[in-house]
Amino acid sequence: MKLRPESFPEFRRHLERFIKINDEEFEQILAYFTYKKLKKHEILIQTGDKVKYTYWTRKGLLISTFIDHDGGEHIIQFANENCWITDQNAFYNRAEAIFTITCREDSELLCLSYRNREKLCAGIHKMEHFFRKKANDSFVKQQRRLLTFLTSDAGKRYDLLLSEYPELIQRLSKKVLAAYLGISRETMSRLGK
Amino acid sequence: MKLRPESFPEFRRHLERFIKINDEEFEQILAYFTYKKLKKHEILIQTGDKVKYTYWTRKGLLISTFIDHDGGEHIIQFANENCWITDQNAFYNRAEAIFTITCREDSELLCLSYRNREKLCAGIHKMEHFFRKKANDSFVKQQRRLLTFLTSDAGKRYDLLLSEYPELIQRLSKKVLAAYLGISRETMSRLGK
Image 1 (cartoon, rainbow over the protein chains, first blue to last red):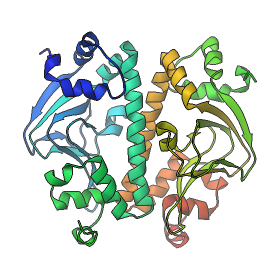
Image 2 (spheres, each protein chain N blue to C red; image 1 turned 180 degrees about the vertical axis):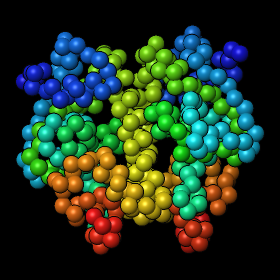
Image 3 (cartoon, chains in turn yellow, blue; image 1 turned 30 degrees about the horizontal axis):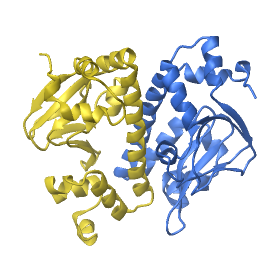
């Protein structure tokens, strides 16, 4: 089913953070994507899956989780509106998923397969530029988070979460936020949150 | 001074991890770079600097360090042969450096300015592709490291270091390795390293 450009103005604005595109180009770009709707609690990617797609969130909230050997749950990433999400290693390196991605709210996604992403980048240089810029951006954001672990600074980690996802605090339970921060509920209370 | 393509076969091989280039293209690409030699202990980037360049290591060993409020030293990144290094946030976002990058050995670098990197990517689509692939790769590697912090798995972190930089173990002191791993010398001994 062909996606209608007029239904995805936020996606166009999202691309235009890094590139300028006209109506025709946006229509061309959109043709590489498919659309998916999921209900709250539905699973998008499960540990062990082959991961064919990366997803841009039009609406909703998803969460990427890693379970360690002792059953401990660690939150890798949130994705609310305008965020991309997938199991990155599995997607880029055609490996099996080690993360589980679930919907915390009813969600609507644009899906881009690995093959289509490569085609899109090869065919439309601007999109290769977009994804390079996006990747550099994501690297720096992740490095900031890594830094708060290196320095064991949970307070800073909370501030970072707040600045990057200001409205998520309202949409997620304290338990989930603590799992993202890698701290206990008690430490979180001690931080005054 | 014009760089001679025949002096940088490793750099060409490095680019060819992701893209195919001919002699003429390699010469074109090289024209965007400058060359720099540094002695052991010399400082490449200092906290507070504006960061105009990203660097590819032809020879030597560099180390990127973050000093926290209490004077604690944390190692962000190593760069030996074939690795890129810079203060990524400062470089991409034209901000001030928060890392200090120093040479642990005499080093030789290829330097690419922000402006030239953009020109190179705009002018030679293959290079935009290269840097996109490289950025995705770096993101995944960093995510693996982040995961060892999330799960507090220092043993896994050591194994990761070993698999990514197998020969660095010989070239760096245990003190430096412990600072990269975010553990004490004692914990490192307990890991049997």
